[in-house]
Amino acid sequence: MQALLQLEGVHAGYVEGIDILAGIDLRVERGTITGIIGPNGAGKSTLLRTIFGFLHPHRGRVVFDGEEIHGLAPHAVKRRGIGYVTQGANIFPQLTVDENLRLGAWVLRRERGRVAALIDHAYTAFPRLAARRRMRATMLSGGEAKMLSLAKEAMTEPRLLLVDEPSAGLAPRITDQIYARLLETRERGLTILLVDQNIAKAVEVSDYVYLIERGQVHREGPRESFAPHLRDIIRDALLGA
Amino acid sequence: MAVDALSLAIGQGEIRGLIGPNGSGKTTTVNLLSGLYRADAGEIYLRGERTDRLRPHEIAARGVGRTFQVPKLFANMTVLENVLVPALAALDRGADRPMNEILEGARRLLEFVTLEPLRDALAKELSGGQAMLAQLARAFMMRPLHLLLLDEPFAGVHPTIRSIIIEAVIRMNQEEGVTVLVVSHEMAELRRLCSRVSVMHEGTLIAEGSLDEVANDARVLEAYLGR
Image (cartoon, rainbow over all chains, first blue to last red; front, side, top):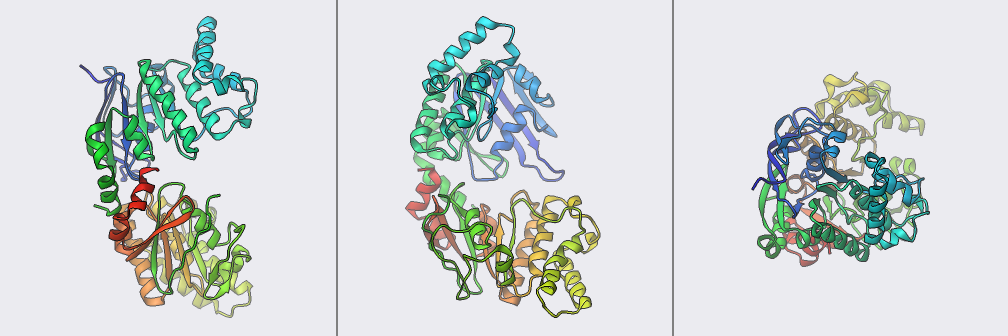
């Protein structure tokens, strides 16, 4: 079966002559969590930015559900069913939690019943947000702000969610909650492409893992093939091997 | 707390690497050493003199130079003018150095980092790698220069420029005896630069030694695992 997302030989970068992605091949299967790990500067975040259309590859193809999407602008990528939870909290700080969620559903604004149901659903998934629905987002803790980013991006019911560093800067207890939500989201049939610095956690929740280094896939395989070798992988990275 | 009870000693004439997972406090450490941040507690000494209550320009005057991960240059000044800044600041402090000697020094340093052809270009026109080289030349212009702090000098920099940076830093270390602390995630480059690295995690020092030693340290592996 065709993968939901497929990258073939993708080269991309910010400056001419320096490819941050230097020929990436990658598949994201439907209904799975695919994890991307790798040292700093390996190109993990650039990969997500390229898929979402912030960067256009100068070589290679990005295929989503059978359609080539490289070269499309971010809003067009989003319309096709891809959501992008960026690093940090991508929310409107001066608006309330409720207003943030409504803005997340902006493209559906004429379907009032559906939006109401989606908001109900977000509050069921994130009870902490329900308790703060009239609070300005700037008052939220780091963990709550991250939950709001996730909930807001999920409002359009994307088929693929790109998630960048969901645990960065958060306390371990909060991190566990965020990951629990991601796993629940997968149970509901959503496909997730996850980038994380927290290697242990990323491998734990992913079905399939890619290790990328210097813009190329260095190693790939199902979780089981990665989990026992994490220390070796880190050691190799530290040794500059 | 980004840096919490960190104890770190760097020997005179050493090139030391500072590594650690994201958010471990490496850049904060550089900011504390250069006086951009002030420590809530603890003491910092440079060549026996306490510096943690001094302001950034006072620390610079004592011979601490630095570069920034995202280059900080005077965007609307030329490359040469940027490199002249430390020498002009020294004149302002009362240093006695003839202008023609300053200009000759700046020209030599620009040649040293391969930027001489761009001396009259505005700093804002430089690529990221060229801006990194200009920052390096500006730091080298400091007199005295005892300690050079490099924050991620290789991030997003072309391999050719990486090599120029490495060669320039090694030469300044060997010929001028400049001590260097370099924060980087680029292990291959660190291996070429320094024989010893310090590893930070959650604001504190967790290991020190050669790259081979720290890569086999259980605490270091756990830190990079994200635990």
